[in-house]
Amino acid sequence: MYEILVKKDLTPTITMMEVSAPRLAASAQPGQFLIVRTDENGERVPLTVCDYDKERGSVTIVTQKVGASSRKICALEQGESFQDVSGPLGRPSEFVGLSDEEIREKRFIFIAGGLGTAPVYPQAKYLYSRGAKVDIIVGAKSADMLILEEEMSKVCDHLYICTDDGSKGMKGLVTEKLAQLCEAGQKYDQAVSIGPMIMMKFVTMTAKKYDLPLVVSLNTLMVDGTGMCGACRVTVGGKVRFACVEGPEFDAYQVDFDEALRRQAMYKSQEVEADHKCRIRG
Image (cartoon, rainbow, N blue to C red; front, side, top):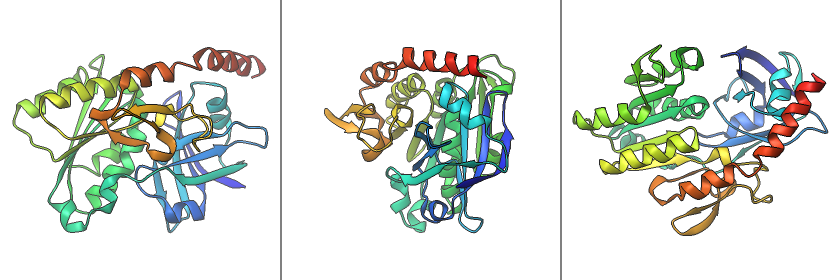
């Protein structure tokens, strides 16, 4: 069993948990994900690793209540345990293979939206701790939907906040802030975007105008997490790829976002029905 060491509600719908998983923590790397199961009858739910502590033997996950399974996860309390926590899965971020010297010479910019802030955090933390120059743009609908703001501010040179309603930071979209920085002459060796699929599509369109190398994470497509269900199939560079075993990160300019958006909506009706039943049962 995998005990929940710490539980913290980041917003009314988003919960962060630190979970005891020594072997997973010992081998986890930025960009990877894990799979949790609340009980023996629970669904296998893939979640990006938000952080890991090798000495403490723990991993941190962030979950948003969007359906029946995520509500079951968020309902667990500190001191309770998951039936299973499996991982690390997926391929680590490409920059993990760079030497310290190579990393120190590079400048990165991360563009995060909503829950995508969680998987951006370990990547920025890893790079910043090894001497890279790191800027981060975080977007949310409003100030009360922002997560990990304090943590993010400690692992970058500049943190830019964007909210749809202007309640904090710049009023506008993350794409507008990215364009502003590029227009002002800021140069980056690599950009990484993680967030809603539609956001990543428009970040890609914006970054392309400035010839900015861009990687996106397709973790939101994953269902089974092992490649067996086929739900995360996506066309990348004209070839069918599986986000969970060949990703979740890909060259943004090779991704067929329109197909990915269609695939993401495939199980929407089933998710709504399951969530409705979950709410009724309490």
